[in-house]
Amino acid sequence: MQEFDATSLALPGIRELQPYQAGKPIEEVERELGISNIVKLASNENPLGVSHAVKQALAKKITELARYPDANGFYLKTALAEKFAIETNQITLGNGSNDVLELLARTYVTDQHEVIFSQHAFMVYPLVTKAIGAKPVAVPAKDYGHDLDAMLAAITDKTRMIFVANPNNPTGTFLTTEALQAFIAKVPKNILVVLDEAYYEYVPSDVRAPSFSWISEHSNLIVTRTFSKAYGLAGLRAGFAVSNAKVADLMNRIRQPFNMNELALTAAMAALGDEEFLEHSIQVNAEGMAQVTAFCDARGLSYIPSHGNFITIRFGSEAAAINQKLLQKGVIVRPVAGYELPEHLRVSIGLPEEMDAFYRAYDEIIAEQSGG
Ligand SMILES: *Cc1c(COP(=O)(O)O)cnc(C)c1O
Image (cartoon, rainbow, N blue to C red; front, top):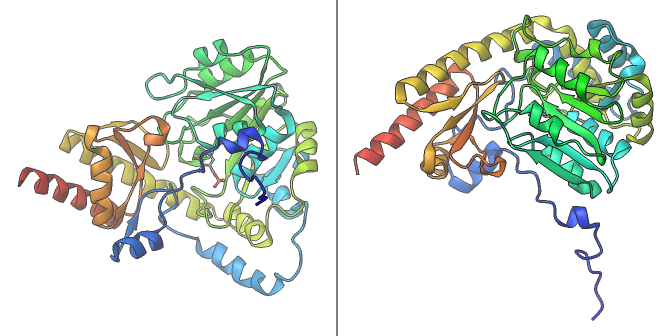
């Protein structure tokens, strides 16, 4: 019998891909374990939910969804340009920033190229690299973070792109403005530097790198941001890249014309204007971070100091077992074994009551262990 050979006819890079492992959805855990009142601290979402201003804007749009969205996202780009002192022609909108990361790779990387990123960095970098058939070059981390000197040393004449996440996910590590600036200046101009700033808003304003302002000097620099984290819109999928206008023009040629849908455009606009919600989100995160580190210190748990809205805690060889027990108690956190961190679990900073559920569950697990 003749059959379509689905595996061997697929592109070699795609054949070898492992699917992205997302945080477990609440509904899935409810279904599988038959429990309710679940707390999800697994995907670095904003625990405050969707802001009131966004909800209002979305409600108004609901009747207009029979129309295609504005393919150029005029209003959102105008608002972004105004807010960040950039030009609209520097912006590429994406169905989440994952979308623009992929567009970048597809615009510039071929199967003859190498793409550099750090060990323990975001899984999407090797994913988009391998899908093209390019060679992923994971540079060993230093103190769980990017070793920028080693990344420079990994450059060859085949290198076309370097991904840098700042702060990094899943480690929360952070590179200073000085370190980043020195690094970018040393990268040859035929290699793109993609600076992924998904957690930018959580970095205190006096330490944030003025990364957009570097693009005029470094035409090979691309900065990506997202509405999924501090802006609270993970479910809608909205992100963007800021680059030199020529790079943006090329990326805009291959993106799907309506890659950012009407609700995402509307919500992103409203979220951008809601400074109060953003500030509140940052505040809640800072308080939660102070509390969770105090909890870890009190329990003798070590953790990677984090600049994001999550913390990666070392539970040792018990990490996988603790993850299972937390799940059974209705607390979803994120295993990071796939990031070469098998002894750690990543915990997103939730609302105080959600964090309490995590603390309680952990203490119960330890009490049950010592109780025999
Ligand atoms: C969450 C995250 C993103 C954002 O992804 P979206 O597609 O915008 O939801 C990008 N990079 C890193 C490192 C992240 O952790």
